[in-house]
Length: 292
Image (cartoon, rainbow, N blue to C red; front, side, top):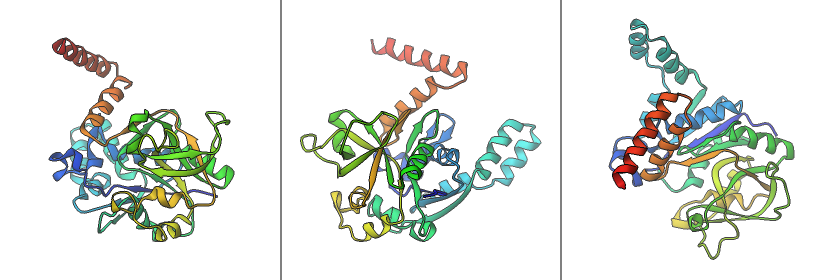
């Protein structure tokens, strides 16, 4: 199994961010100095993957524009002698071979993945959700690809979440917990958005996968599930062999305004630039004093 392609679904409405997402895709919400989806693309590239398919929808043209070449902007930066900023802008346009396809109707994540079938063909592929950032010493996708290639199996990144948050996730029913934190383990089943009482575990899918081409057949044979949508989790559970890999690093799910704010604060505090850390800490301290 060799993984050379990554698929990034980014077609959702982003209704929990309205009204800001009325004209701007949720995936373009900035975290520090980059839009969310750029972190996702960079993660795939860090895994050695430079063939990317982004699944978009109506009103998502800003994503394509972001990764396109901007001749006027580059000319102005060059004229102004802003070489560092010019390098960063050129890097975005040259980062990978990025292709796009539009999901005509938003019928769930599983439906979005089906749109990748022609591009992916008969090869395994990485799947990264476009609204989830994973910060780690080594690319989360790189670890998944290495693990999947080593055992010829579908691989899903999993993370323990608070039990009260379980109903918001696809949750794994694992066969064994005897493996090391760094090793993958077999998954017996998945349950999409179970109640806290019915959940088999609190190991949640983190939005990172390596999937075989057989997923497309299972998706076609899967009936709509939770919310009347085609759920990817329902199709994955039909695959013959699925393994889970514990997440390393920090995951930021840019799903709500609060999540987005927390991601900006936490990532700013970890940023290399000391002045930014100091500024953020001063702001937080001032806020705490005000609240107090």
